Length: 239
Image 1 (cartoon, rainbow, N blue to C red):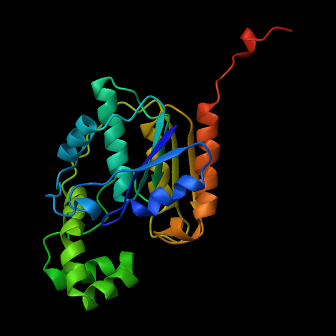
Image 2: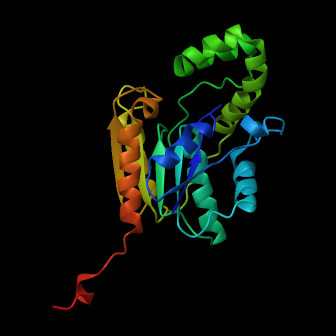
């Protein structure tokens, strides 16, 4: 079983590949997008559909796999699963969607990708906290990170939600109990699956997954274990 992890806006896959030693028998793969990390020199995508089309054309996910996405990553993971379904390709056994409102809801953030450097940092400060102060103090770090952050914001701001049939895979939605996302915004993901649906709120804010890594990975591991276990119908059992 492979677990493909989609980072948040401005995030690095390094945060997730460290999970590999903590989830037994699961291969953890990080989805490194252009314009970030080791691909910082490549032009980033600013439209989700173009990004997803390029991703599914380039990646063989295998036959048994799952997606985890945090914040922006949840939206990209969801759209990637939808595109795989449209193409008739293998679908993820499970979707783990973290700290993101359901896509059919009205946008909750004021567009900020167009702001100048100072305005952008101010707009991002409530979410990114200490990182913003580091960026203000380090011009080289700003030059490295801000283009990718702007592109990620554009991905969300330009996202055109399209109503489609629900996915057949299991869906687990997680979030921080002290995040400004409401339980109702997370619960609204339920309409996007015909499979099992679970919602878990863990202590913490938007980046609860750093403080609650053990609890989150326990949820992921238990769900993946269930998805790998064959279902046996009682009518097939012999006395």
